[in-house]
Structure formats: structure tokens, C-alpha cells
Image 1 (spheres, rainbow, N blue to C red):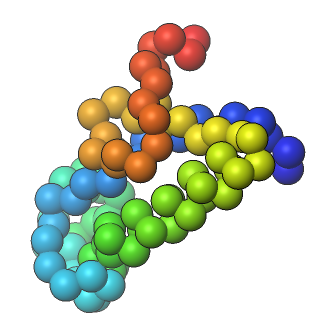
Image 2 (cartoon, rainbow, N blue to C red; image 1 turned 135 degrees about the vertical axis):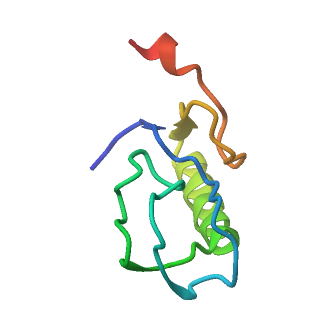
Length: 93
């Protein structure tokens, strides 16, 4: 799409739910892992995240963007992702 700069917002890269990556689990109630507690309601089947593999993909994206003279920044407030340089969210608006 030709963007010279991409700014990520809302990439927490952190989950309260722990376990084997990609394992299917059933939500037992309020969802502590997303912006709203009802994101996955009780009884919803979902897969636990694979943060390690996600980091490999993020690093690849960072490297490809850098090689092309572009950049990816992370403006997530409180996020745990360390692959991209951080930028203050409030400074963007």
C-alpha cells in the first residue's frame, strides 16, 4: 500500500490465559485478555496465543520495512511487544 510509516495501536502482546500455544480452550466467563470482558463470552471456543511465533512474524515485518527504508512503530499503551520502537500514543494526536 506504500505506507512509509506504520503505527501499531492496541498490540498488547500479553495474555492472562496461559497454556500450550494454539490449544483450543473454552471461555469460562469474563475475558481478561481483550479490551472488553465480553469479547469471548462464556462457552466460546478459542485458541491460546502463540506469542513466540508472532514475534518471529513481527521481526520479519520490521526487517522488511527497514530494508525498504520504512518503519513500524508501536504506540500501544502498556503493551509488552518489544520488537518495534515505541512512540508515545498521546504524542500522535
